[in-house]
Length: 254
Image 1 (cartoon, rainbow, N blue to C red):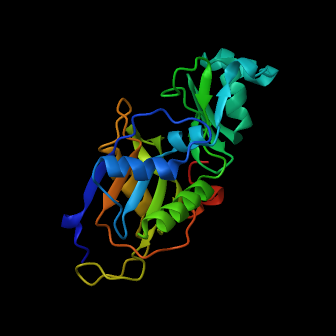
Image 2 (cartoon, rainbow, N blue to C red):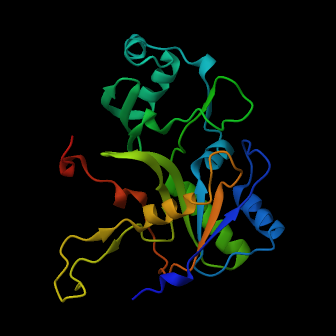
């Protein structure tokens, strides 16, 4: 049985705004030093996508977006800025549903979420700018993990997170959108429960659970975009977030 009593959630404050070209790994290491903290073996580093997106230049100026007729039509339905709607469409494989002022899409990554994950909050002091998701969150996570492993001599996992709503539930939770060094799913298929029954379908979305745990100390209004989750025992694993994405053919509601 896993010893879950040893798990710690450590917030890492970053005071400065992230800008294009910033070295996220270096910023994390320096922020840890300021806290008299250092990475330990098997730490999981959870990073909000927003600082990754900012460092990678995934900020768009809406004044430079020319809305199409389709965007204008959807704008009239939802009340959203037609330029934002145009951007949502450009970042999506398909629009899943439009209801009131909500646009649910499947992003280019395969995530089903509101507004293609485009965020208007915590953009910085720039007006009329929005933050997009990273182009390849797994690639971003792998780079940071490799850099952290190399520069700290600790083998860690990295999760890039974002806040998504949930079907049939009120409220949002932090979930994993990019991962490196840790299996996003813990399968119990074929194992026995406490009474000797064979488990046939149980697979726990560990990456999402860790991201949600990290959100306990990450607040939208605070400067805690990085959290260390310490004490979860895992084996280093060459992973991808695609493992958590349910295929459309298996989705009962699409």
